Structures are given as C-alpha cells and as structure tokens.
Amino acid sequence: MAAAAAKDVIVIDGSYLEGGGQILRNATALSCLLSQPIRVNNIRAGRSTPGLRPQHLSGIELVRDLCGGRLEGGKVSSTEIGFTPGQIQGGNFLADTHTAGSICLLMQVSLPCLLFSPGPAQLTLKGGTNAEFAPQIDYTTMVFEPIAEKMGVKYTCDVKRRGYYPKGGGEVRITTSPVAMVSPITLMDRGQITKVTGRSWVAGSLPVKLAHLAGKAATSLIKREFPDVPVDIEAVQEPRHAAFGNGNGIVIMAETSTGCRLGGSALGKRGVQAEDVGRKAAQMLVKNMKHGGCVDEYLQDQLILFMALAKGKSSVRSGPISLHTKTAIFIAETLTKAKFTVTPEGDPETGTNIIECEGIGLENRHV
Image 1 (cartoon, rainbow, N blue to C red):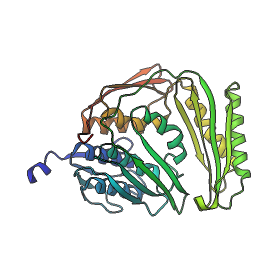
Image 2 (image 1 turned 180 degrees about the horizontal axis):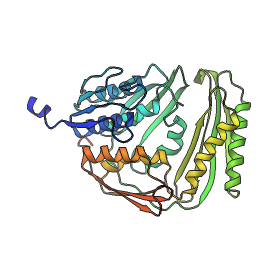
Image 3 (image 1 turned 90 degrees about the vertical axis):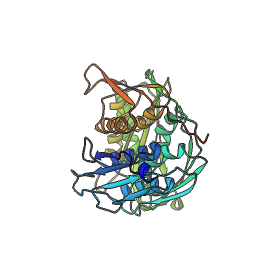
Image 4 (image 1 turned 90 degrees about the horizontal axis):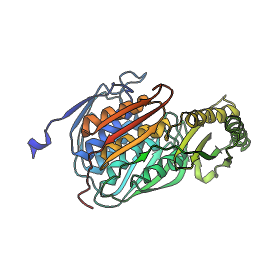
C-alpha cells in the first residue's frame, strides 16, 4: 500500500494562468475524485498576500475530511501543499472559514466529490454568503443549480443565515445524494431572452430604500438595451434573524426560451451609491445578454470540471473565454486526461466560442 500511496504525484504550479485559489480548489477536488496524489507549489504567488488564505485552507481541509485524506502544508500563508486522498465518504461535514470567506467557493470544491460518495451527505458551511470575488449564494441557486441539474448534479441548498464582509457569520446547509455518473451537457442554442428576474437586497441596519434604488437603476439600464424584455427585480429586506451584519447587493438573471440562464451581480460598499450597485450588475448582465453565448463568464468556468468527469461529449457555446476558464481547462486536462477544444466563432475576445470536451465517464462504483 505504501508504494501505491507514493504513485506518480502530479506537481501543479499554483501561479499558472489565473494563479489564484481556483487552481487549488479544482486540483484538490479532482485529486480526491481520481485518487491521485498532488503537490501544488507557488500558491497564489502573484497575489499581494501570497499563500493560503483562511477560506482556501477551509476548502482543502473539507475535502481532506470527506475522503479521509492526508494534507501537508495545511496552514495559513503556506505556499505549497501536498494532498494524498483517501476514500470519499457520506455523512455530515462542517467547514468554517471563521471570516467572510465565500461559502460558495467551499461548495465548489466539495460538491463534485460528494456526488461520488457511497451515500447521502450533509455539509454545514460557514462564512460569507454574499462575498467579493466569488459567486453570491443567490447566483448559485438561480443560475448554477438549474444548469448543473441538466448534468444530473442534484443537491439542496438551505440558506440558514446570510453573512457579509467583514465578519461573515453566514451558514448554508447543502444536502447531496450520490450519482452513478455525470451526464454530458449541450448548451448550443441561446434562443430568445424571455425575461429578467432578480433580487436586490439589504440586511442589518441598512434601509430597504437602497434595495429599491439599486433595483430601479438596474431595470432602467436593462430596459434601455432590451426594451421588449420584461424585468422584475424584487427589493428585499433580509429578516434580522436570517442575516448577520450589514450588507447590500443585487443578483439578476436573464432566462431564455431554450432554458439558458445568464447572470449579473454586484455588492454594495461603503461610499458607493445604491444606484451604481444596480447599474454595475445590469452592465454585467447586458454584456452577457449581448455576446450571444449560452452561459455567462462565471458559469463558464464552473462547468469545466463536470464536463471533464461526464460520460460523453459536452458542447457549450459561451462568450469570450475567461482566464478562470482557461485555468480550469488546464487543471482538468492535467489531472483527468480529458481533452478540451475551444473554437472561436469570429473575434475570440468579443464573440462566441464553442467549448467541447469528451469526458472521462467517471463512475461511482457505489451506485
């Protein structure tokens, strides 16, 4: 067994391409799924604070716990880790960033692993539900979840309490059931935009007026670009018991006649007008509505790992390829040997691109 544990450790340069926490999350998840030991060096080498931050450490510790793996170098500021996976288990697991670190990013690293567990699992994730530099929990439920379901990825997401920068304090429960395998996905026909819906929210001591102002500003900008598309953005005051701290933000989504979903979002900050928060989210959404692709830039990179694992060929028409997506493809190809092709349709920087992948057909031998 000792010889097997030492097999072909794959070394990954953590500073490559996007060079952030995403390399760590995707590499650790695939390491766990494929029983492939890895070593990641130069972690976040180009960042102002290099090495592991608390949220990155929480994520890889969570994967370690759910497969009984071994983690070396697992401490804050570490620039190199070694990970030797064990066997994925069902059961109850807890991960707490102890900061406003993103709960959605904890979910990204753990969800693929738990789909291949022998039984149901429940994750309790603590940190920020609506955090900077990460998908907001509302984006995950509105955009990611329905599209992932097309690939057979099923889970429930129960937001117990919302938490914001700087204190966090949010809590989300994720319940998963194992799958036999992941299905390939075809998202090639964008169809017509049928409606835009969304959620403009405030929490804590902030007045609900801010949510109304952000929602109205977003609606106005979208209507100017797409006058015939119905827009319905709800203004929400989060109940006191369901949110920790003050915060405001907006998540909006365009739905199409073929079932595609495109998102836009923004978070409020001290000194930033509520109208500017709404406009920022609307500009992001409109950009995604105009490029003609079936996915936005955030869903684009989140689908890569599942495409690599799926049994069969996936094809996705996207807008311009993001650096996160290029990084996700690099990690997926390095660890799974799945082959991706990206074919530009016109200008790759502004037009659509077709991402194709023949997945490895990973099977859950427990199901």
